[in-house]
Image (cartoon, rainbow, N blue to C red):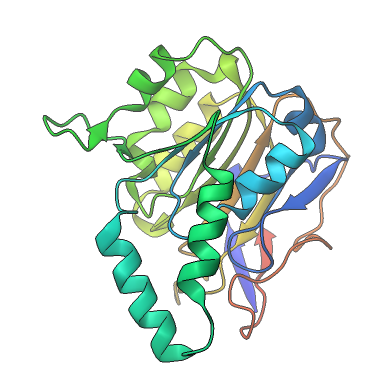
Length: 249
């Protein structure tokens, strides 16, 4: 299944891409050098999956701040109900709670806030306020916050000198192309990989994918070409056809 992106998405791949995170949805391709040179990981969007963060600290055991206010008691009760209906013998709750408690301790924190909106409400904070709390110089960011990422783009640009790597999922690309183009122009880290999300629609008239995952790198060596999909890519929906991205010339 082919999808097409405008030419401002053109990039050169990193030579040291690895996949971290679980198979299919939840895993991303990133530069191993960026991980090794990072001194902190900020992760926006937790849900019930911290496999990316877990794989990251196996390579470089840095401080981790993971933000998501939606992961609370109500969230877990709903997830337990859904998973029990699917498979009464999955022991989902016990496996997940054990994994959660094992990972989020010490310098690995789950902070119950949404990042992006400047709101007079205790469960919200801005990305600027997060950066202001941190004295680290090489911060890796993973951002998967279901459309709220557009609130963060200007802050990412203004703090780019402190960012070692970034993986970000962009939603509703059809109505945000101008914002994306501006961000790609102003964000000076190298775009080194793009993956189309096959569980999201493709616009009929121009075959534009509505959700893409972008990886940026500060430290990796660049190849003179790219391949899409990359040999390490996996479809987000494992029973759906992978997207073959084509970047217009």
